[in-house]
Image (tube, rainbow, N blue to C red; front, side, top):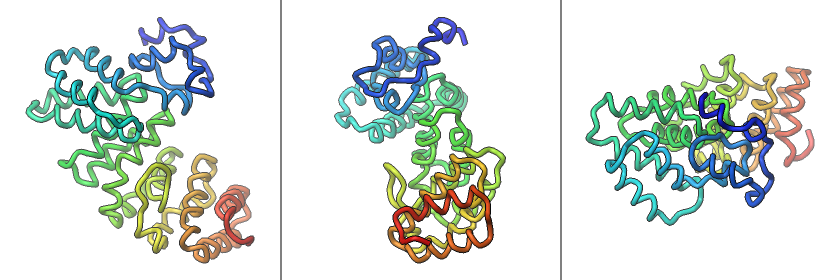
Length: 279
């Protein structure tokens, strides 16, 4: 809160630049110092995670103990953000080795509750990459990030557990049956987005590309969802499935139209079949 009070309202409540080159230097600096959340995708992509890592380790007073991690990340040549974020999460996991449970818990809490959405993205990936956690533990741990108020954290959250979901798909689908009836639309949307057969910036789920039927109970639960955020995810899920199973998608959509006259279902069906033959 004290940090927010020192940042002018014109910065805190900005819309965000459309181009990276148009981001004001002060905003870029605050983002890289971990003192400000990104306002849009342009800013989110513009964050220099290496600079941010230096700032955060200093903020947490890790001192020389963090030097090996910082040196390795400085030498990391990959620039794509979906490579950088997991790499930093992996460095944190390595740093945790040898630390006692209390120290690790304290640091995880600091990262998870950090004011920077980018830092919270690291925290989400720490959960996804932790080989000591079961799928059930990872999904329980990722849930707060699935409900995060920031769009970037919510997207990273499902990407962070994509690999575990693929490895234990049946168990994940069973778990998500409870998520698609949650009161929070972010949680409902997560369950759908995390299981999309293709998705964005993520490994495909070959089993669902071949046969999408096992995920149908999840889709059925939100086929008339009141939130457009969830509707878009459902329609995109079906659009993914339509690339390999168009007849199945058309059959599902026809049945939904027969069962529901709601504008929500109509919107989902229209978007889901946008690349298929007309119903």
